[in-house]
Length: 510
Ligand code: HEM
Image (spheres, rainbow, N blue to C red):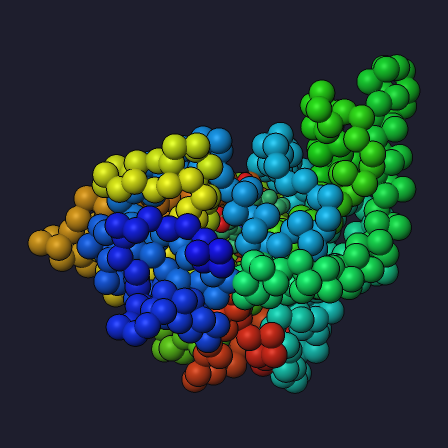
């Protein structure tokens, strides 16, 4: 009773065997189960509209909610079902980043969602400049021979530079020392968050948590040494300009500015020390950079392991060649609206290989618990989630879900009507056909999460990834491979191979 956390008695468990201490043993088996129990629970229960409980190696079993109830769940306020409460537990933040408060941050999320997104057009010239420089460096300019490139390393070079420019601006985004410490902070934190947060039983978390915190703390201090003076100066300049309109200062267009403005506008954070914003920005390195690297790597892996006869790479190149004709086209945000195949290709990789095996992890915090639309009572303290992989492979929403079909989201309505068996067409399938753009979050596409806490950086990530894909297909030939390296499940992360390589050769341009 002390070790196992709450779940409602009335809901069936997935992966339970007839044995003594069955629930405890089911939780222990999760240490090596990867996402098997999660997918089994989806198939056996969620697909029939039923709830189930998924055991958990950290003894934090979770109620897996079927698709039919996700919209209801996503609309509940944070004081009824909390996202942040689960993140503190799932990420073991109390130990790994003591004193770091991720609660009450809706105003910071809004800065990412609104300010970054509305400035994408003006940031595009820098973005393509960074992409060109980093791709050329990682993949080479020699058009006479093939080069073997580690995909994750290449994508890391590209994404780290381009995203850091948006997070912390120039010159910090060119400072190799800062980039080194910030990415390593994110790597240590990401690994420790999964190990301590998801594999260690909560009773042992303090010990392993404080141990894992040591390298995190080291890299944080090193990165903050570069970041804090910039944050301090920026806050000072913004304050001064607000007090004196004649003060000559033009706010750089980056997340430091937008978050600093949000912090100053909020009475509760107005007087916070620069560390508050600095640590927040560093924490975003994990949420913004590693996620984009993983999605870029999955996209490349899916394309190079596709059937060469399908000519997906070549079709993407033809699409890009028709859009990026002059230098100005690369800096024009309208160009990105003309890339439905690239848009769909990245979304298909996020469908097949989402970053998280379960999303929308929430804790019931309402004092009296909640009652789901299905009539189930869920007591306070219970964790709930959605099974991303199961849902993304559900043939009610995706015809031939196991097939890699990169242009499935770009298909014209009439073609889809021809391909879908009308007798099995469900209401949801027709909703799905209206929700096809890469950055769309919906209750049948959880690659970005769903609802109030869906990813606020998804428009930025989509913009960068599409530009990068267009640039790479236009400028490089690839060699196809026969076997795609499979992604590994680590906690609830779904991680592409870090060592997989691809053969590329620069194309000769007339
Ligand atoms: C391809 C790249 C990306 C992917 C696949 C991705 C995916 C996700 C997912 C699945 C969630 C929801 C997690 C959940 O509900 O369990 C999320 C949340 C979040 N993402 Fe992203 N993300 C990406 C890029 C970014 C970028 C570029 C930023 C910032 C500039 C960002 C910032 C965030 C933040 C702050 C949250 C938390 C939102 C909240 O809890 O209110 N992400 N992301």
